[in-house]
Figure 1 (cartoon, helix red, strand yellow):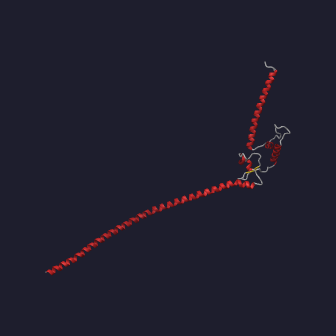
Figure 2 (tube, helix red, strand yellow):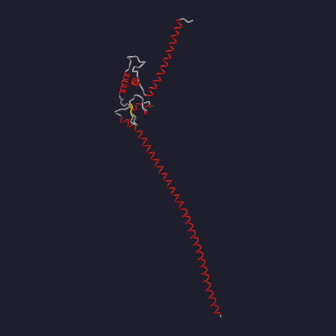
Figure 3 (cartoon, one colour):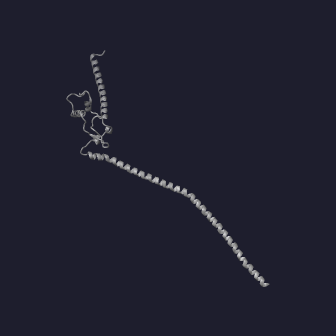
Length: 224
């Protein structure tokens, strides 16, 4: 049977193990809370401003840091009125104070410093931010004009080819008919020329035979 001292030692060990488990579980919960706060852009000041219990559990009294005090004051100001804008979307001009839930255009941005509002260099930052957009739009417009010009050229070439084909199709029967008529005229003229030549040859033969006959008859008369 264990003695009292052994039981007490065992209790101390169990107590230490229990405290270690509690601390481990508490750390896991704190990590989850911290991840949720970072995801939604929340701070302890937001919890103080919107929570029903003003006193935070787990922080010893008298050890509130200057940063925590500043956050608390800012949270109270946020609860009373609208905070000044700290971040600006250069594309749309939307602003965000940096507290409470961040808007969609900055929610997933890791480096938010490029959206900070700087009164001295705000114009330059805005121009620098809009420069790539303007350049991209100009390039897109140039590409669109080139594509449109190319499309117009292709359409003109296709239309010209279609017109030439249509003219060829229309003119082909006319050329064929003209060729046929010319061939017919040529054949007719050839036949007429052949007929005329034959007639002339026959006439010439008849004319040449008459003087010969006359000469023969004269000779016969003289002989008689």
